[in-house]
Length: 114
Length: 114
Image (cartoon, rainbow over all chains, first blue to last red):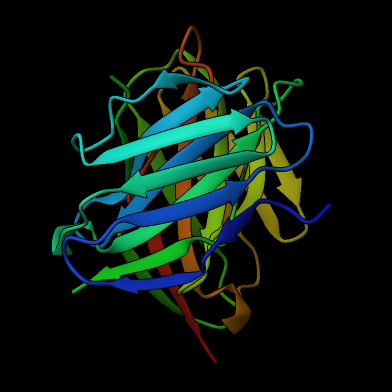
């Protein structure tokens, strides 16, 4: 299995621009998570989906952030408009209900907003 | 709300030492606990997962224990090597409706020098 796939790996954009991050979970996994990691705040859960339905979006910072999961193999996290304080590494993770609910992480997208 | 604490925040040891990383959590009603490794600029790699009914899990030189009643877990690394240098994160999953969500500690940054 290819694991969780994220794109792009690096994104540099100017303040005010729209940013779209993409994630392909592991095939057969029914949960998908978006996290943000910064030195100041550590790893924060932004939102997670179960069977393509958003379950908990309480970590989404503000209305500038939105996430979608149109099907079981694809999700996007969009920031519009972007701000310098959004600079961070964004991780996507997936898990299968199974018996262990073990989470698997993607390599992350390093976002820099200038 | 679950809070996860990891001590120490950083650890520097010479090669060959046996070492212990600590993790504590405030709510003992957990479903499982997962230890991750993160190399600089990389994603999280799952090392060990302990179900709430288990006391320990082993993988090679790694041994993780769980004392649910006291809200503690330890990760034991035997005969440490420079390649073990990384940040180690502990995360717990609560029982109940939030079964998808992981609560993370801030991590222990480990440096093993030759």
